[in-house]
Picture 1 (tube, rainbow, N blue to C red):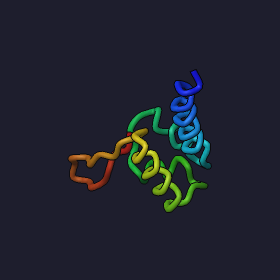
Picture 2 (cartoon, rainbow, N blue to C red):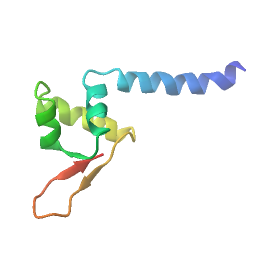
Picture 3 (cartoon, rainbow, N blue to C red):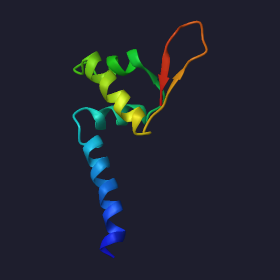
Length: 81
């Protein structure tokens, strides 16, 4: 039984390390309302620097918790879900 639990505990620990980082929960909460552009996220979370916002978004994308997509409009930018 111990061998069955270890992989699950490792996954839970990994998730905790990601979600436990500063600003991650707030970013996820804002994105639950719908896709946002980077500038929209920064406007909604003004105390968060652009550097840290970009860092957290890359971490979340790397873990598969969000995706960035290019928006096919006249305005260049990426939509984050």
